[in-house]
Image (tube, rainbow, N blue to C red; front, top):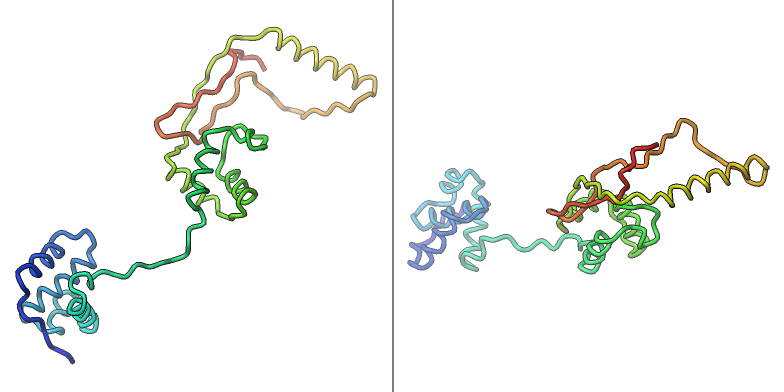
Length: 216
């Protein structure tokens, strides 16, 4: 077994490695710096391995890297990994989408959901992501699920009356057999919409326009 150790470090080297050992946020790098300091104090690889609880082979590996490259040899090489599906252009597009209603992009929905964004990115960019990835990017773009508030509008009696007249006209045409009028049994439609959490910029308070009308 190779039991060679370093000679005492130069002052500037010792300061650098000691700072790394004392203050680096990553435990692995603190441990590797500790190996170098112990070696400079005369400990052999087997003794160092017992102190820091690694194998002698690991100690030898990082001592060799330090000898070749200095303290930079104690760091891991960058791991390239798989390229991101969500590029900068897609991020900017998602942010623009979330600032507008889905209807602006041809969807019959009032608010964005992670499932809808998943579908939109596939149609627009050919990028297939999971719902959880969409949720993650919503949060990275500083969006949160927030309960909106009602924005009460002045009642428009003319529009209400016109709506009642339109329904009456449809029913009359259905009675004459001109059209087939379909309705859902046991369905109740309230004039005031039900509120649920929607994606909105962190710190904002979305407003849902509605008339102060409690009728069904």
